[in-house]
Amino acid sequence: QLQLQESGPGLVKTSETLSLTCTVSGISVSSSNYYWGWIRQPPGKGLEWIGSIYCSGSTYYNPSLKSRVTISVDTSKNHFSLKLTYVTAADTAVYYCARQLRPAGHFDYWGQGTLVTVSS
Amino acid sequence: EIVMTQSPATLSVSPGERATLSCRASQSVSSNLAWYQQKPGQAPRLLIYGASTRATGIPAKFSGSGSGTEFTLTISSLQSEDFAVYYCQQYNNWPPITFGQGTRLEIK
Image 1 (cartoon, each protein chain N blue to C red):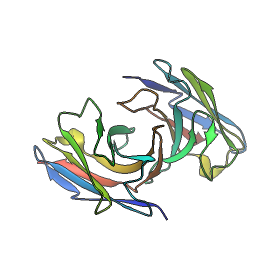
Image 2 (cartoon, each protein chain N blue to C red):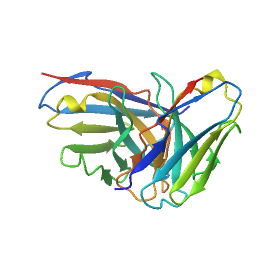
Image 3 (tube, rainbow over the protein chains, first blue to last red):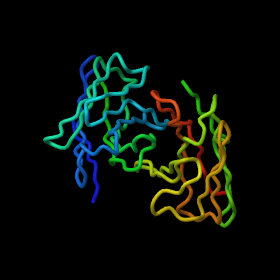
Image 4 (cartoon, chains in turn blue, yellow):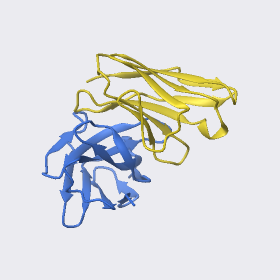
């Protein structure tokens, strides 16, 4: 059964780096049929796409976050990761990882999400 | 960047009735549009992709239509579990992928 599970610190200090990992089970992240994406949702607000990665390592980022975001994939561990640098309170959100259909682009499976709070 | 605008922000409908939610794109996205349902404390769930194709396991009460810049999600015979927030998402021209701001469907 396909599962995606986010993990990482729930509290990050202002100006530091947010790091999350999405562990995938039930399918290989090396599958050619999918991208793997990160989406976030500030409390009480809507969804914002952060970026996506293909198993080859090709990455696609939201221009609004591109200067601070790095997404990587580790096929040996079957997981992919997110790093967001120089965080502020505006980065406080529930962070979701999701499987993204290729070449289409919609997200068919999501992790449960993890709340990351940025505070000094 | 393609801006997605959903209307109304909140829709009040009685159980058993039909709800019609709208999503407009700032430029054509062809049929590359998806709809998601999100309940409190849960991740979004894919309902519709390709503007009108139901995702696996989604009942026929959910239907999508439209192409280009105007899209509609229709939910028939509303039941208590259908009251949630609904988002549209375009994937025609990305990056970036963009979502609408959501429509909250509430019980009247």
